[in-house]
Amino acid sequence: MSLPQNHPRLAKRPYSQGELVADGIVHAIAIVAGVVAFPVLFGRVVALGVASDGIALAIYAASFFLMFGFSLAYNMTPPSPLKWLLRRFDHMSIYLMIAGTYTALLTRLEDRFWAWTLIAAVWTGALGGSLVKLVFPGRWDRLSIALYLLLGWVAVVALGPLVASLPTTTMILVAIGGALYSIGVIFYKWHSLKFQNAIWHGFVTAAAGCHWAGIAYVMGRTAA
Image 1 (cartoon, rainbow, N blue to C red):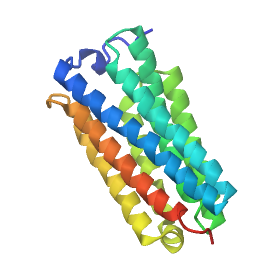
Image 2: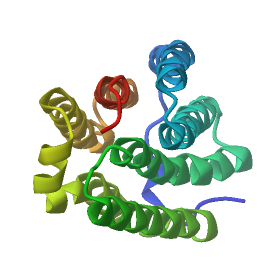
Image 3: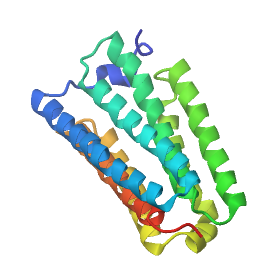
Image 4: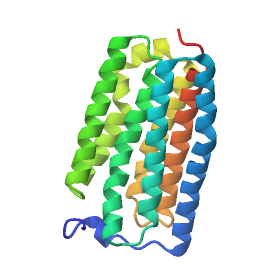
């Protein structure tokens, strides 16, 4: 099991031991932070007794650990058929993380038409993108990056309802997280830069942290 012949990833420079260690540390920080942070958020939801928040949070937490777990496994595995298999799940889990984050956030959107429309759109895109990653590994990678960004920013079409429903603090944190993800793509593509992969995953970790904080802020309030 491998990537298509002459795929650019196969010609990518090997990372040094120091780069691998740095990348592993970034992943470990993200996963440990999630292990600590999500029980806190679940505690808030239980205290409020909002069932829809609990379901959405379970989906969000699962997508978080799937993304960082597969990313860690893929990036730490040396070139081999196993690595290229893990690459499929790593890229697929990014779609799931985007959809999972939206699911948690949109439970508090008062306009239910927009809430369900956005959830349907994001999950349709995420599941479709995931299927492509699993069935056609290594193909249309540039298009996939564009789709990641498109799905991540799709909520701007419902900016009015979002601003009307969500606290300003949540909106700011979510916007900062989106900006960090988007800026991080520059480092994802900057293959010649030393510690490029660790820097990219540092942006991903910081962005995920901002989104968690924004979601925690709104879920810590009594639902309207």
